[in-house]
Amino acid sequence: MTAPVTTRGPQETPGPRGGRGSEELIRAEEPVLAHNYHPLPVVVARAEGTWVEDVEGRCYLDMLAGYSALNFGHRHPALIEAAHHQLDRLTLTSRAFHNDRLAEFAERLAALTGQDMVLPMNTGAEAVESGVKVARKWAYDVKGVPADRATIVVAADNFHGRTTTIVSFSTDETARSGFGPFTPGFRIVPYNDLAALEAAVDETTAAVLIEPIQGEAGVIIPDDGYLAGVRELTRRRGCLFVADEIQSGLGRTGSTLAVEHESVVPDVLLLGKALGGGIVPVSAVVGRRDVLGVLHPGEHGSTFGGNPLAAAVGTAVVELLETGEFQRRAAELGVILREGLAGLVGKGVVGFRSRGLWAGVDVDPALGTGREISERLMREGILVKDTHGSTIRLAPPLTITGEELREALGALEKVLG
Ligand SMILES: *Cc1c(COP(=O)(O)O)cnc(C)c1O
Image (cartoon, rainbow, N blue to C red):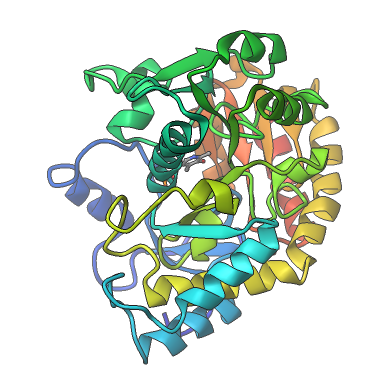
């Protein structure tokens, strides 16, 4: 991309600027692309900050931010500069050798999150898989659980990714059906229910793995005290607390981590999405030395994990978060979001949950499915995505302005009116 996106709001323009138009490109995907997604009918060609532009030159406000992979907006200058700088020097070594970017990334990420060690991976699902492996290894090596007996307690309606093991402990039939046989060793309890958790934990339990806020489930925020309760319970019962902060972490909720709202420090954090700055996939398992220290050479790995390009971009992401500016913006603008949504309750919105710049909005089903509302918003120049049923998720880049946020809320009011 050479010139920035300058126009705002949807504009009806005559057609594609050379090349194939949106409809043609969407039709072209059909026979050659696996149908595992049902995207909104918009074909994005360029983006800058909070705005994306389609192939016909229509502009949209991005209120999804790549499911929080774009917390700093599209093409944040500091992140693009870090990537360019690194592209000109070194992109990949594999972990067969050291690279000159990885130490700083690990040091600064550990310091930012108040942990000791970092296991760099690429995608969120890989971080979750790695967290599961580390927890199991810890159970055998440190806790003394008999071989192959370790269990991990998870919450119903979780979303932790798409691998075979992860869908093994999903309660979403669409995500599971047809993909068995499943990996054993998981116990599922209701979310936000400490008594159920207490009952599920026993001497085989390696870890409790939960999202501090359940994103895909519809931005479900547990009661005050739940996360502190999970911390107390796991400590008392001698198992690890693994928090999946892949979507909730890195500024989204108004703090670096969502667990900070209850001043809780888990034993292991899973990070991803925004860690790659919207440029490359970067994920990490971050944890205490006595936990991540259970891994020895050859026991786990990744060809791309910790590559210098990822480390350079990841370090630039950590640097942005070290300023506290994005966390502060999320907290402050989150007030506008919450007040705006509160004003829509009874006017098409039946309920909502929000923390920072993250909201799950339940729309009156009589007005349409989440999908239909998303399509109507798209026609108003606002991009969002439904989670399920009549719930839509709002998760704009943390760089959004108050004015842009009010514009999005105004569009929501219009399509519900
Ligand atoms: C997105 C997500 C994942 C999976 O990340 P991928 O990069 O898509 O594999 C895991 N956990 C949570 C909470 C997520 O939101």
